[in-house]
Amino acid sequence: MTESQEDAFMNQTPLVSVVVLVYNTGDYLPPCLESIAAQTYHNLEVLMIDNGSQDGSGLVCDEFAAKDSRFRTIHQENLGIIGGRGTGVTHSRGEYLAFVDGDDLLHPAMIQLLLDECLKTDLPVSCCRFIPFFGSPPEPGKCPDDCLTFESPAHLDALMHDKRVEYSLCNKLYARHLFDNIPFYSPVVYNEDLYLNWNILQHARGMAFADFIGYYYRQHAASTTHRPLKDRVLTDQIYVARTILDTARGGPLEVSAEAFYYEKLLYLNSMILRQANAKDFAAEHRSLKKEIRAGLGKALKNPHLPRSMKLAALLSCWGGVFYAGLCRLMLTDRR
Image (cartoon, rainbow, N blue to C red; front, side, top):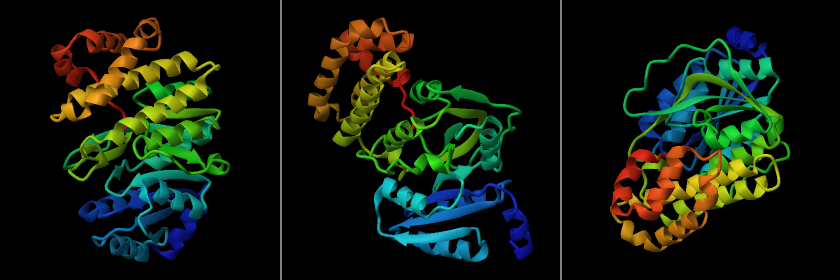
């Protein structure tokens, strides 16, 4: 980018800070950075957080920063996903914030469209669809002409139940002020994006949704979603779901949060049943099944729990081996 081009672009407002988390992303990193550099909205500050990479990814960041002044590298020890993103938030100067993982890709107009929706609706958060891909990414789709709006507390309900919204930070654009009084911290390693989004969106009066695929999540052997099941996968997700339920108690979202919590129990139970080493999680399976049975009567009456989940609950209690096979088809999780 030439100096005159940079000056012209910087006259656009507002500045959007893009926090890119980089950890041993290898050959996937350059396409990720190129997809950010090619955004139709140019007034960007791109903070590449080299989170203790040992494969030369930090050098790739430095080389990219040398050729595009909008990009800046911050090298640090590995502070984990939350610690890495938190560094980006601390060093950001933009009025809006976006988050990208260093092996993923963006639709060329993602930031422009999400910013437009925030400005048109005067809402502090906007989001788009988010899809996984293997190998080559899909061709960028058509951009929408309008958007949906979720006024508070519907935006929190959408976070729990609308699969278009997703739990992820990466398919969203946030007004910077939302982070001013919220510590960028998570007590969990799994479902940390959901935990953060729940806390952030409680301070937002709504959210805009642009119905297009803007964020492409690369799936490969090193992806966090392809790692073996661990006890913490279960305990962290229960912790987050319980936190949401406890926060919603006594408010307009209590019944919705009860459905969300119950659905999470069903999902985690099915996750165990899908494992080749399911016997290693026998104690966790018994605990989940006990809680599912205890809450069954109330769950069957909950208007926010889909019929498929109610059927899954019945099968979970009495389906035996038959349910273990069916759960692969019926239950999926959101990122």
